[in-house]
Length: 433
Image (tube, rainbow, N blue to C red):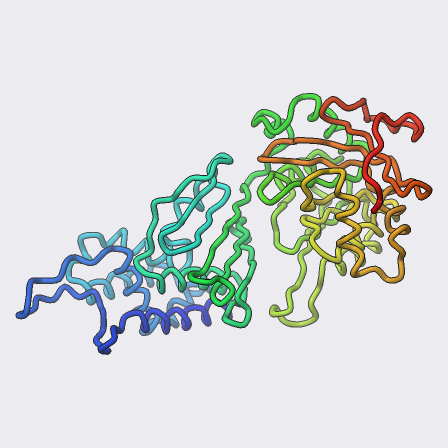
């Protein structure tokens, strides 16, 4: 079980930290010494690390039982208090804070817990034990936080991965996991991939979805764009949302999903859960990674298997690899398809989709794939810094000129709520390359 193995690993690492070069334990004991003054009262975070180490050495079974909900948490609170008193005679002065922080370290997010609970915070990132930032209401800010030492920070980062079912070590030095309960996507890298310290990236997703009116009120788009998005949601259009990371793609896709007809049957396929749709008739499916045991299941597998599930629509949370080919085939089969993709301009999305699909193609020529993309993808919405920046409508692909036919629908584009004849297009852009 991941929790048990992570606790055993944490115990070993913290035990190593507690020994200095001479092999003398660095326990935070408040012992008077005849050779000098009484040691300074230990820092609370350092005491938390020491208490965690002691508990994991002496009561690992209790920790595992609490994690598995077989034993009430109160049993561990009593052990924390008793262990703290053994480590420091002054621990009683801040016992309640100490107990809570130990529980947060083992089962929560330790000093980051307040950020995890803050709905205004969307991102928490770290590059060193004393280098943390958060993004609150779309603005990145420094977070005044410092771990007591590099080893505790390293331990904390690894524990987040292992506790959420991931695997990370010197051979697999990057891992992305999902905390389903708190709706977090967690990325951790460790040396040797990270040069000096582990890096931590936590993306938070709201417990309750924002709908199109909420995003309009926040300034993501105006009334005209809101009306078009609602129209496209109701009319069965296939839409891709593009932009760089943290541009707002997933947030808008999540709101767009909620605007679909209530009884539209949608397969939501993701590598890591991020969309959490609230509308009924959504089939939520996730890939199965190799380290999880059994036969791995990819996004390509999920989309391909969905062709036999009487679906109205597909939604791929993030198109980053060969699932692009399955997306193209599903859209070309008459299904509405939705998703996000990394691209800086909406006009570049068809070729970006082709580039991702090409390695997985099974004999389809580039021209065939372009024709499939041109006939099945309707709308591309580009976001920058949490605002809709540009929208294009795709009308098809002309083989004789090797061009996609597109209208710029926003800003200042023609009314594209209805399909325009190909010979009346206001703007023709992007060669098929």
